[in-house]
Image (cartoon, rainbow, N blue to C red; front, side):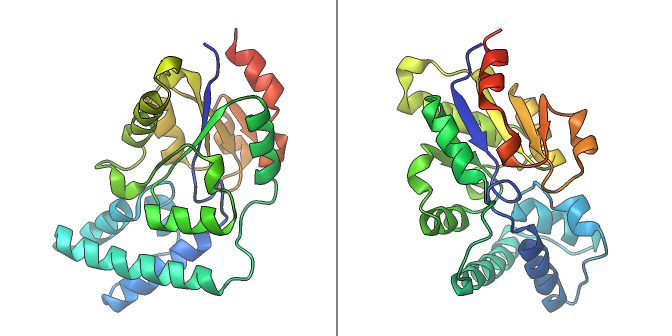
Length: 232
């Protein structure tokens, strides 16, 4: 299969903001007279949507969870996150992202984002980083019913790209996902995609057995090598 599209995860892959999410989720739980345990964010939330994260954290603590209650918590957390970003002079975008995007664009690959983050958060960061025009499709966590590791987000991205470029007849197997978390890698694999694991969040050796390629940083992705292998 010829590689036609590259789909990026967002948090932990494009932007180094996982500590911020952990901080604000912990703060919201404290306001609900609850506490985030050590290591629990990593176990429950990494790679998953905030809705899935909060839902599981609350169920673990015996809270009755309604959609209205979740919506209220998510709004508070997202507002806090976005307000914090507005105070930053420089966004924590991974420094080698721009060069990788240029290489992928030069290879005539279509780019997209598939994330558990909300669309407003994704668009805020991409707009401020002047990267929004580089991505033909964005699938956010508030547009799908099932969070990663379910493949719904990736399959929706393929469907949207098919609608935008019907002549390409894009198949999921012709897409490459770039992910940093176990849940995200599993989602892309469940969608029948090839996966690059970038060791921004987990050690290289822990990702290596799960992915088609594993890199320590985005600048290490050898686009020519990936393209050559995808054509075999």
